[in-house]
Amino acid sequence: MTSRSSQPEECLGGADDIHGLLARFARFGATPGGGVTRLCASPADGEARGLFAALLAEAGAVVTTDGVGNQFGRFPLAGIEGAALVMAGSHLDSQMRAGRLDGALGVAAALDVGRGLMARKRDGARFDADFCAVNWTNEEGARFRPSLLGSGAYAGHHDAAFALSRLDDDGVSLGDALEAIGHRGRDVAPAMAACYLELHVEQGSVLEDDGATIGVVSRNWGALKIEAVFEGEQAHTGPTRMGRRRDALLAAAHAVTAARALADRWPGRLHTSVGRLLVEPNSPNVVPARVSLSLEVRSADDAVLAEAGIRADALLVSAAGAAGVGLTVAVRSERPIRALPDVVCDLVALCAETAGHRMIRMDTVAGHDALSLLGRCPVGLIFVPSIDGIAHNEREATKAADLDAGRDVLLAAADRLCRAGGSPERALRQLGAAA
Ligand SMILES: [Zn+2]
Image (cartoon, rainbow, N blue to C red; front, side, top):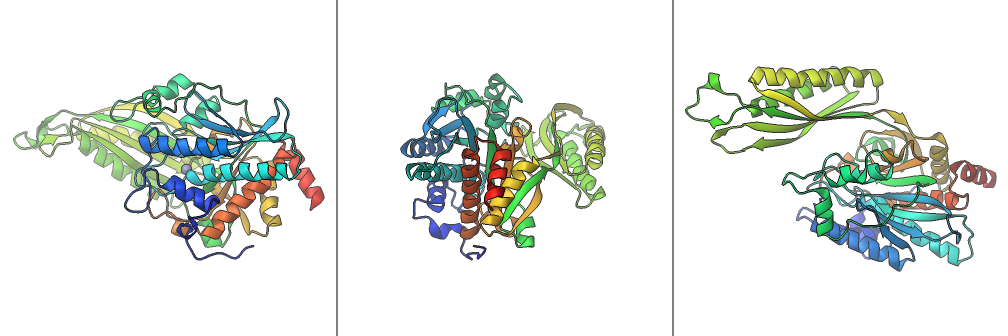
């Protein structure tokens, strides 16, 4: 069971299994470089959503779409009204020129698990919870900010009106974009899940370095995300005297290098980045009048995160001062460092070990929809290795055998939960007794 295929997943795209499903989703927004650009609520996202809904319905699920475009496929396993819900999923939206697995793996695997559970029900298995496969809207935050908009709305971190009013860089709202692709939805979202599971590619190289197949995420790194705007003065890049310029891009440049220097204060313990600049008017002959900048700071150490946050605020102020421009902080959002519930970790770990997979417990540095639901219901996050740790890149890949392992562990955990009324405590007791 632990043997690993050396082939990447592309080789197994013909069948109607997890590999075939991934290949079908990868066609929507496919890029020449072998990845996808499937921004939230784009036509390509609409096509992927259409396929997801069609395959859910074909597999016997009741498909609904809520007011922020989250798609739910409820598989009626329990056969009773108001049965508890075991939910699994991820997101079909992507970054620009991204890999084909980020998000799509968790959605395709959840769909495949729903099929598998329905097949077991037809074979006589008895369940006392329903299973629901879900696609969350705008996980990535690539087109609309903040990220985790759909799962955040479901979890009650913000309301639907807030999510729908977010604007992309062209001034189009999420609500209008969803309406345009026919996926805004009018259904009421299901009641809070009894337990939520998510399968995702690791996007780092901890599993590969360790030789493990399954990562059970037991903690998330904290993050501080700042959206800042430097306000300078538009001028001619030729005649305007250097001393008179108020260059917003110069301030941003200072901020970019200072952010990097900040990370170097705590090597390996602090990750910082400026991933996005919006330069206005962005012409070769115009001193930039306005620059919007996204700065993020991540750490698993509360003290480091707190001090780095203070220093991040300060570096923006001094960058603005050095360039003689104004500064506005539009958004400042923090994600705390939190532990994922032991009972779900233990359940997933036992499922992995029972199947013979080498498993380790680990942190997630990246944010995921599962973290939106953390604290609202028991949550489990399962990682499979990313080859060379490559992520948010067209070359992102995972070995076929590892994809199978991830899907199998998700199926085993979901199966146990659906036989235990959705309760991870009960499922763990039953599994422990059987082992
Ligand atoms: Zn993702």
